[in-house]
Every structure is written in structure tokens, then in C-alpha cells.
Length: 183
Image (cartoon, rainbow, N blue to C red; front, top):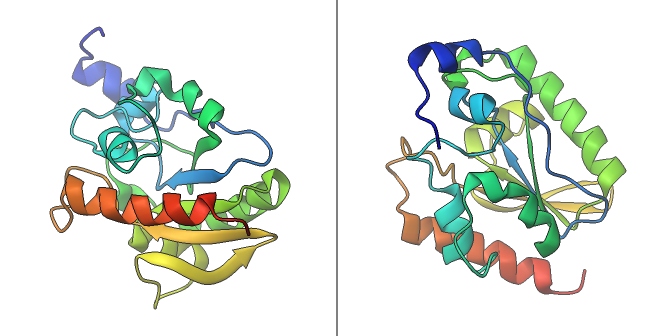
């Protein structure tokens, strides 16, 4: 991969990154919003320190470690990726409360239309802000969106020091086990 400059990353600010989605997925993973590396490359969770791809593999969702550039392969496993807020920023704290609320509304519409078995939001803070659920914790939620169940996962960002790749993989694995059970 070509090394991106600071100017390349800054030019990606506010850019939109296409979802990797299809109707009836087993799990639709939902990030907070695209980072600048994701927006510059067009590949979700592209920042090298992000643990999404390793944790997805460690938890058994994929048979091998995928690179961000292989994101479209997720569809063959019944998996997809979207975001709460579509626009790219350097940091999630650049998003407003209104953007989170509107993102939650749009996400709910998308989930109702696509009907995944599970919506998996990576980041409890983003889930709380998007859906106004201050008491949400990591794990399955009582909320459903249409026929889709909701699970909140730890944020795989390298900045999330509260979770290791191994403990994240355990939580992702709990979701994987739930997703293979009949609803």
C-alpha cells in the first residue's frame, strides 16, 4: 500500500465511505464514523492500530485474517460494515450530539431495510449517543430494530486500552455464537 501523507489524510476529511452491505446479513457491524485513513483508502477500519480485523478473525467470524482492502469478502461470510455517522473525521470527538442522533435515526432505517440478524455497534459510547440509551453496556441489548437484534461491542480502536485483542475476541465470539443460533 502506498504510504499516505498528512495532506492525503486531511484531504479525506468529510469524505463518505461506501457501506459493505447486503440484505439479510447475519451481522452488520457498525463503526462510529470513518477515520481519515479509512476515508483516504476507502477501506473500513484501515488505520494500522485498529484491532477490528484481527479480532474478527480471532473470534471466528472469518477463517483467516482479512486486510481492510479485502472488506468485500465479508459479504461471503454473511457480514457487513456501516457507520453511525457517515462523514470522516480525525477523531470521534469531532462529531456533534446531533450528528450522533441523526446517525442513529438513519442507521435504524438502514437496519429495517436490510434486516440483518444482528446489528453490532462497535463502541458503547457511540451506541449511547446514537440511540439515547445512557444505561447501555457491552453485550446484547433489549432493543430491537425491526426484526434485528442489537449487540454492543467494545471499540476496536487502538486507543481503547480497557480491552485487549483477546478480551475483545471473547466478546465478538459471544456475538458470533448468538448469530449462528436460530432466532
